[in-house]
Image (cartoon, rainbow, N blue to C red; front, side, top):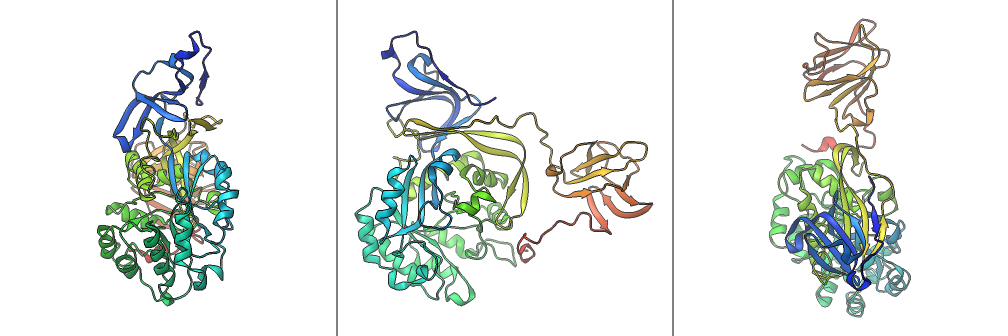
Amino acid sequence: MRLIIFTLISVVASHAQQYDILLRGGHVIDPGNGVNGKMDVAIGDGQIAAVAANIPISAARRVVDASRYYVVPGLVDMHVHVFRYSGALVPDDTSLPAGATTVVDAGGSGWRNFDEFRKTVIAHSKTRVLALLNIVGQGMAGEPYESDTEDMDPVKTAETILHNRDVIVGIKTAHYAKPGWTAIDRAVEAGRQANVPVMVDDKIYTNSGRTMREELLVHLRPGDIHTHMYNDRQVELIDRFTGKVQPWMMEARRRGVLFDVGHGGGSFLWPVATKAIEQGFVPDTISTDLHADSIAIQQSTMPNVMSKLMLLGMSLEDVLVRSTVNPAKEIGRYPEVGTLGVGRVADVAVLEQQTGVFVFKDSWPAKRLGNSRLENVMTIRAGKIVYERSAPPVSGVDTAIYDLLFKHAQIAGREESDVGIINGKIARIERGLKAAHARVLVEAEGYQITSEALKEGAPANVALLDAGRTIMTVRNGKILTDEEGLSIQDVSRAGPYSNFK
């Protein structure tokens, strides 16, 4: 059932319709105001007019049945690319459909070209577009510009910020390829002069003369932000030999350095994120690093990145705090942004938590399967509906995720069939089980599968035969032998996973 907007045919006097939009019966989660429960949200004159139970529908010109959904503050994505960068996107086309009503361009412009950014993008976007100004005057223009220390001017950067405080919320330094601390130190100096935070995307290579420990504990200030936290090439969050969070990362967090996801096309790895979250090292803010490549392959929209973190154990409430209140505070826009407080600008996302089987990719890209996913179904920006989903939600689907799935196997006395295994037992034997639902897939066409008790619920102790010769054995759902490599996945793009303990 799709989200339905009712345009009421009024039989009451127009003066009684004090609200423009009424979101009725949704599960409202507004971390900034401690709201978490079934409520109505009324919007009038571009602002949140009321958040309460049982607001009369006769008081609104339009009523949205939100009873199947979560109603939350418009999401705040503090790391996107909408100017200058080679993969820059149009925010109204990409962020608003994802429920992100506020985005922060992370370093596309510098002091030399910020006026162009303001005139061509910020002024013409329905999305609230803010900026982290690049310490490089040319902005994010690639090499040799981004390593040109002559173009890193703290004074001119700070002056540009002070003249545009309504839309510039911080400084970005990124992609510096030379040795030493010039880029970071000049960005921090500009941040000190303008009293704004610095976001760092650094290249910590062997020949850089920099270490992450020194960066976080010596050069960055409390309130400064390191993005791409679940990367491995730059942040070094997880010790590869012990699998533990580096102790100086904990120390940096204690001294007030903040950590941002910044998913992007190359900065989110399953083994890093999994181990970090298991040890309680969760992000301060969730962001997408959305650009042309990351939206196409990793699909790193806000709901998608939030869903990945929920797959790794974070709750819906946890990810919402880090997608609304926390980023708004970090950029100095709270409570103007990030809440559903009465009297605040009516920026709202309506989210559905779908069940099914969904593929989530990291940056290599390696996939993981999950059975829950967030999807934005409506976005309200400044009191106007700027996006409404037209496609129906996923419903009535098989939500099983198979640890091992044999496709098209020959079973003695039966038709060719599929055999799905979950938690060491045979879960289903039938045709048409979806290959996309399998963590490990074995194409068994032309082979015979045998077992002492090949039935649903039985222990998954099976063998796969080729003309009577055993080529694979499975005990309690675990593959013991695989002579023909039928279960081996293509890992050519799966990155250096073997480097992690």
